[in-house]
Image (tube, rainbow, N blue to C red):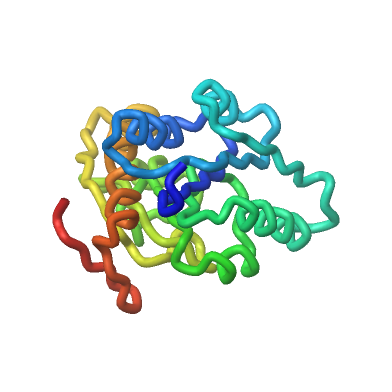
Length: 206
C-alpha cells in the first residue's frame, strides 16, 4: 500500500448499503482510497459480512463490555488511531458519537442523512417528510459535530416526494441517491476540493 494512500474507516450498525457503495466506488477506481477498517457496534450487522466478502478488516466493538458510553468511545478512538485513519464515514451507525471521538477526529467525520438538512434531523427522517407533506426531500452529506445531524453541509441531492409516496417508497428513492452522493463527497474530501469556513463548505465541481 502506498504511504500516502487516503485511509477510510466506516462505522456501521445495519445492512451497510452505503458501505457497499463506497466499496464499489473504490473497486471501480472512481475513488482513490483504501478502506482500512469497518467497525460495528452490532455483532450480526450485514455490513460486516459485506466487508468480509471484499477482504476488508472488520471489528465488532461490543457496547455491553464497557461500563458506559465514554469508555466505549475511548476504545473506538484507540482502534481508529491504530489504523491512522484520514476520514471516518458513518453509514447507518446507530450510536451517538461522544465528545472524545468528535474532538479527536475534528473535521474528519462525515455522515449521510436521508433528508435535506436542517429539515428532519434524527430518526425516521423519511417518515417525518411524509407526515409534514413536503414536496421535496433528499439526502445530505455533512460533517459530524456534537449536535444531531447539525454539522456543516457538504453536499445535498433533492428527491421529489410524490402524492403516492409512503415512507418505504420515498426511502428507496432517497437511498438510490445516497449511494451516488456519499462516494462523491468522500472523493471531494480526498482530493482536497472542499474548504470549511465556519458552517459554510465551499467546493469545486468535480
